[in-house]
Image 1 (cartoon, one colour):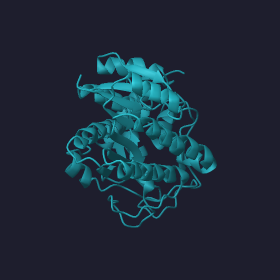
Image 2 (cartoon, rainbow, N blue to C red):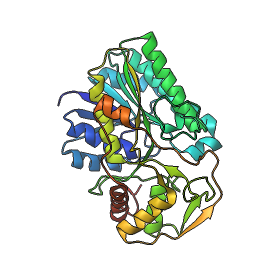
Image 3 (cartoon, rainbow, N blue to C red):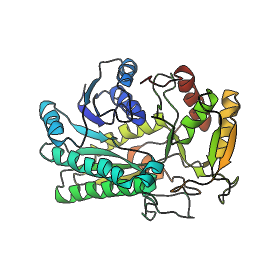
Image 4 (cartoon, rainbow, N blue to C red):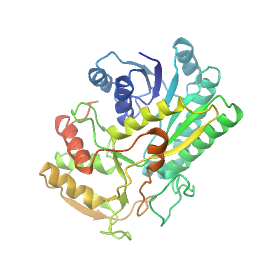
Length: 341
């Protein structure tokens, strides 16, 4: 193994795929997770895919003394920070909880790291940091004005990281602005397993397809888009995981003090109805559906200009919407109860 990479939130949906990618790159992943929206049962599956034992520490990033002890006891080279609450709708309902968990938790993680030599840091940010705009696609120079508390959290954390690098120019940081991760590992071993009712479209579609839910509710049919439903940039979670490895490798070649803000998306816009119809076609299933009012915090359309990621990281998304729908259903079909908490 070349070096140890600490992956916060490494048992979660995106984290589990990132951990496998870290292992496959030749580095040794170390998971830190409090299992608030993940399952420890994912760890053995990650280990099987990685073909090596995977160490996982149950710990909250806000536990500064616990994190300090962990950092003292392990020789860690870099951090991929994924831990955090992630529902836009929940953030609108309880913004204080989201700020406390996501922003203050990250502040404490940085404080613990400050006492170490670890300075390479990849952060799981979001396209929610951008302002609502008629100008699409969104590149990294687009105006920043989050339209929900979740996005505000992400931008505040980006600001924390930028300030950390300004005060201490030994940091090298990549803020990865995700668009909409979907899909699962093609083997169906790991995937998205939300607590309670899914907040995102694809797992909801999968649960309807499996009979766990009666029908899909599509929030908004009157957006100014080509079919009236919201348009997003959906990216396969395997492509997203590869983007983290590319970012980590790219940080090795940039000057200290560098902060990179980079989109991870496909640049291919897709409406809610188009995703559902693709899912039906690829998997030969029918998804019962009904329209519902728009949700607070949602917008009509956004998708990425991903060219900077290719230029800076040598990375671009390669998987199609067909792949995303096929792999998501394969995971759901093989794991009808997810990890079976």
